[in-house]
Image: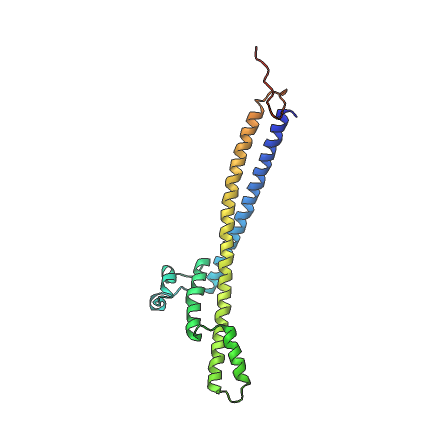
Length: 200
């Protein structure tokens, strides 16, 4: 095989890879922007303001929410902090650390007991409803966090793909430049190179 043919194939392949990486960068950037924009818009519509002051005085809450105190919730990290270190803390305080499933099972068993105290049953049902609402809100907020995280990963992927594309374009350019300098008669041989013809 002629050396120029091999160089042309490699250089063309590099240029194709550069184009593919550039397209991937554009798609990833679009996906990341869409994800981040959707998370921002959906959270902003809820008009949730991050708690501040005495509302976050609890040492189980303050270290995680202090940096967001008083801000409108518009980002995934804010949503995660609110879900895991505010809502969940209050849910655990109300239920003594029991989950919705555990409280629901207790309420179901008590409802079947004819000798059950109606006041205790009503309190258990109220707690069950509170935990259900808390779990539903946490689920929505954590989904926003997950979607926002995927958006951030897509943006970083776009940056990496864009950088890779620039590198490949640069190498392809060097390849085309080198291609013009290789004599047409030069072959590719395994084990040794064909000597260049002597210049008179």
